[in-house]
Picture 1: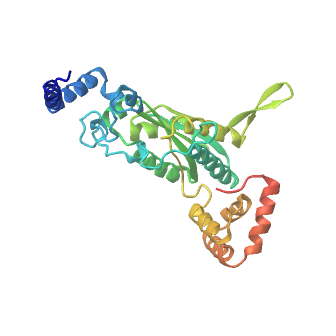
Picture 2: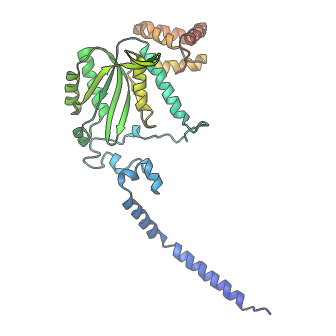
Picture 3: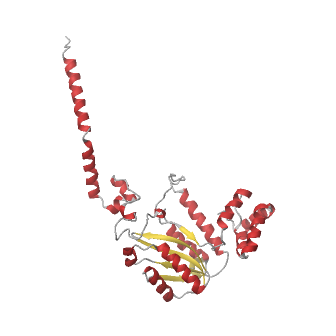
Length: 317
């Protein structure tokens, strides 16, 4: 026996329930804000703006208050929005079969190539470490700007100072690790200069060395360029945000752009042996040789590439 009056009642009840659900969903914005506020109360600002904060349900903001120029007298005074601290590329990282980031591998391989190309120019190599003190952090000093001022003083006093370096970030501090080519500098004088510029007297300077296995034992070998490469690569591989940079005359001025033009014109990068030969020339002869090699004499590239493969087994930038 059918009951025709039951169906409309159920439908009306369902409609009312649906309206009640919509009414409950409509004013949900304050509840969402309360949940976000509760999450922010449980999550400190340092965690919320870091990569770890993504696991806490709060999406970090790269341009947080502490990273803007006007973000507080202690944290942001004297600093702009440091774009070099964050990855601004929208490309997703490329992973290999082992799950490693191929972009990081390319970056480290490129660093090794540029490092050893500059080492081949010649000269005595040393390691230099510049630190940031508590006073420098409170004042919000820009370590790169002060390092540029230090380089000018060093070149006026001691002449040649060519370098390749890596920046290390430890909390709110920034340290610079360098391998430089130049004259001997006393640690006391260097510390006084850096304290006068950056208010940070802690400076470390030492010779390059590396451990080499000979038989069953490891022997410390001084003035081995591989020691400087391993020292810088250790800090470069710590974080994906670490950056390396070099002075213009680490090899010679404009060698990276010229090598890329050669790659487009010839099909491969110039060898390290050829770059070293160009580095020892004066500016006029080097410019003439670069133009000649880039546009006219292709067979020399093939000979140079074969010679470089036999000597080192590594090519490319």
